[in-house]
Length: 338
Ligand code: EPU
Figure 1 (spheres, helix red, strand yellow):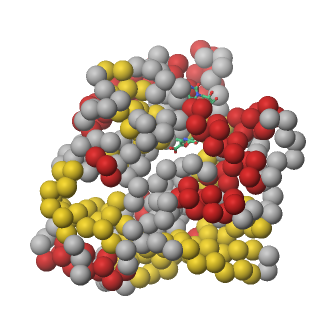
Figure 2: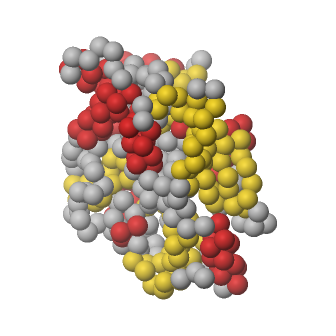
């Protein structure tokens, strides 16, 4: 039996903490209840919105359909030739999974410590931080096909992973619901701390041969020093993607802005940090009512308390316009707008 709630305020279900009314909401903790929920939506001709941790979306309008909160839980562990395969329910909290691995000294996900959201949401945007992306540890996932009601397996090559991107944001958007994700971690695995802010932090602590736990602690420390905790202040993490521009465009900008950072992207393109662009355009710490740009990381938009989704959206549009004007770069939102 599924329990469907009506007219639910979604502010506690999205990390930006904006208000939006859902006509119906249901929590599902098994594939069977998920199937029942989909049947209910079909019978009543309702649009479906799947919510994990609500960390990557912004409600600009009310939602006149059925919100499905994914609560599928559990971690299955399989050991094989010195490696560990974890099959994790889509509703498990991502950071708790990372802590589960770090506590056992299983390496591979420690750089992804403290990323808000659920395990099921992680592959959709191929979450990444400090030199590691989900695809580096990904084996396969199971997803519920909204058309046939069957569960299908997607191997890594089926997912078309890219920078903050996968097939689930493109061709298959809205067609599947991820129910579990299988990852591979390595007991006492090698650590990767080449990312500048990470190696600086470890140096500061006088650690020259960091363990998995050390790297996780350093990531947590760096993130806490720059990124607002959604428990304290509403936010979606990075609001925009880091844009990829041609080397010739970059060289032009570099003439005018000597310290503009860049990372290699392809043979004729570079990635430029959107945070730098927004910061140097003077937006860092900007505030209009309760909508603002975080004081320590310009890539993060924040809701100080009562901002509406529309106000955050308007602010993001103003920033995009200004960045286009100043640098000739179109910023793309990382966050999904609803
Ligand atoms: N910078 C500024 N001002 C700012 C912010 C950044 O000048 O306000 C400069 C920094 O000094 C640095 C560069 O921009 O030279 C890059 O900054 P940082 O290392 O903080 O990383 P980022 O590019 O801003 C990306 C991810 C983050 C991830 C970090 C660490 C994207 C869109 N964002 O941010 O991901 O944690 O790298 O790997 O790729 C997220 O997706 O929600 C997220 C937080």
